[in-house]
Length: 149
Image (tube, rainbow, N blue to C red; front, side, top):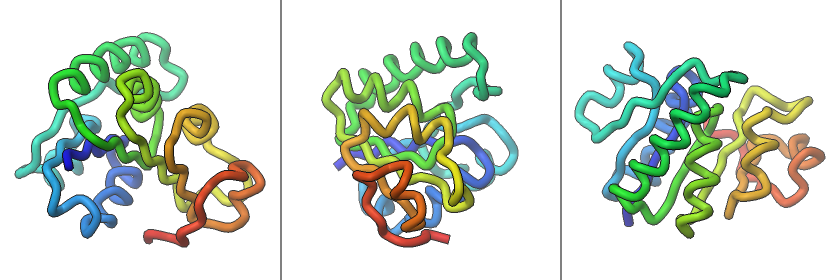
């Protein structure tokens, strides 16, 4: 199985790294921001740098959509896994078009309100993981697996 791990640098990337037991035995590649933490954490991994800032930035959303198309057509992953943030959106929608399975893990630190990325990818996610039972009010079909922190 080949896995695409897509997430912003910082906490989103750290959460993806915390589920290492899930992806470490599989062929994989990463999509994240070119920042010091991601360069260090992923130094020996196959990685693609996406455009940032992504929050409410239409220009970078378009650039990342084109990037998602090119990467997913080239790499042909079986699965896309993401913890957000906005960089996940084009990968999930292009992934859906290409019939690639997706797993989204809603962030640990949002209990009382949904994230914008979570709301946008929820309709196209094959599996939507919540880390708090309280998040079910925003994502009724979410699968509660507890916290990964």
